[in-house]
Length: 267
Image (cartoon, rainbow, N blue to C red; front, side, top):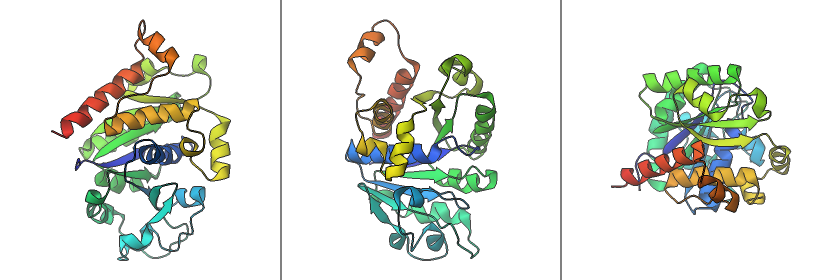
């Protein structure tokens, strides 16, 4: 088991879908690949995962950071162990205790997935606690520019950035393509996900789309990204296999490089 297993999904802009992608990646790792995963809502001021999954939140990450045993804050949903955060915690907490608290649990899980706050100061302890970072952006100038502020934090803290996920693709003719995102960010794109009402439907049902509808295009793309994270081979559709004979898709190549890094980390 790799010791570099705490992964943070980050952005400095609300509404880009990092909470959804953190949850869906955790769901895919559990339900598609049989991994043991702990999903942590580290959005300290405006947490969402407990609401998304309809958890009771009697004991939360805030309590664990105040001295309550972390095991008391772990809930199960769709096969994932989940630590929600509190919407109305009034006591002072030291958010920089996050790394110390989570390090004790690294050996119990194949992966610990961190959702983060878009708040600049709240991002710092999340990135400090992570072994690797995935940036989440939509393919527009404003979002990409602000997202790269999160990359600056990671670089200053020397936390490796594994890739960037381009989410909520709506009008490709009027948005950055993957080559432009990579050229601007100097970070490999590891997944591209179109905006889709099925994501909203899954949230309404309080069930990850990768769990309730695993064969749709969004679920397959997230599964392929999850496969690269845990070192499994990628599942390509018949059409993708045909296309790859003539055109190598950028995100597929980048995922293969990520997969190779996983294998090397196990040596």
